[in-house]
Length: 118
Image (cartoon, rainbow, N blue to C red):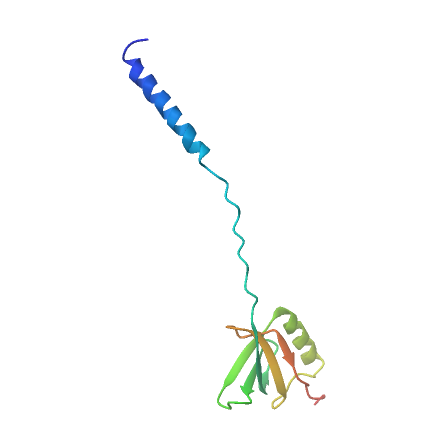
């Protein structure tokens, strides 16, 4: 070994000695659990203006200038399609209560009596 190799050996040994304490300081953190807030379900009461296979348009009981159109949730869409096929759909003037998640226009549940066959 020559004198020129001694500084290289010293640098490698020093780097190895410094790396060990750094590796010992690493800790495994516990996973953070984030709880989803329960979605708030709101109700809208009104009279049916129009019902199709994909959506329902309703005018509010409290404010006749307020008209909202709701699309159906996947489960509700099947139920509404069955009503239309049986010719028992909601018609103009039927009173309904629509439940929907806050901040959306997607109907989750529709309460009310559809009229008898036309």
